[in-house]
Length: 377
Image (tube, rainbow, N blue to C red; front, side, top):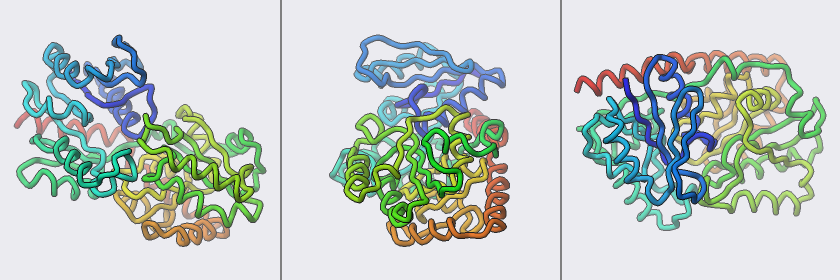
């Protein structure tokens, strides 16, 4: 089968969607399919960049011509199926010679201002609806996203739920110490982790505020892993600036650490060294970091928003607290810090069992079942 993935961003850019696109593509190549991923260049170069990674062909296209180039390339490549992750190219693919499966990773709606630079929520919601509607076949990673998408596209469109997966060959329990050695903290310290964009919508600032009481006690540390909040990643830089300012003002500058995006092997080691992952996101289409942490035996604390309640079992694989309730976040962190070793081991075992259900092998099988249904119709 010839499969074309169209995505606004892709490898080597690192983010949730980019990771999912690559994980799906490389496994499709392993199964003998011809796969091409076309996306934007991260820079303003005028030339097309060609990359091959794990057998997947990547075409990185200048931003100004990305939508029309994607459409033109699709006509010349003649794929059996177009797996469309892109918003920018979306309007050009509502009519296509090849079947199109529209992949919606999240529906932001009124919460869009927390993720993007657009302040006018109504305008952003209208734009989102325009870029989402117009297709017959969709996949989403969670039931939460399914419900939000159904309100936009109506009942005539077919929507399948195919969750994101986790590579259990990489993300699994490992010996602790790698991360603590890298940031220079004691093995006995309570280490709180945040992985992903340091953005308002992702709850990066709430993670800091909730951690402050524990950081002040002297034996806790907060680590941010992943890209900083920049225009190219989220459209808002306020979270990162606020965290830096407040940590200095409160005298906690030496208790907060920032690491760049890590390679998968390093990221797995980092997860294993965390006592807890915090993801107080206001909207999450899936929550891949929660799943990766669970595969390493690390529990998570999340808000009761989006799909996070589907991934975290309260008091089994972590804690779920009301969205926006920073005090409850702090309380959950303290419970995690003070729980007995037997309870920690119970949570660890529950995390591993939960992650096992999302092995990429099972996810790819479900995805190809969807492909088969689309091709038949």
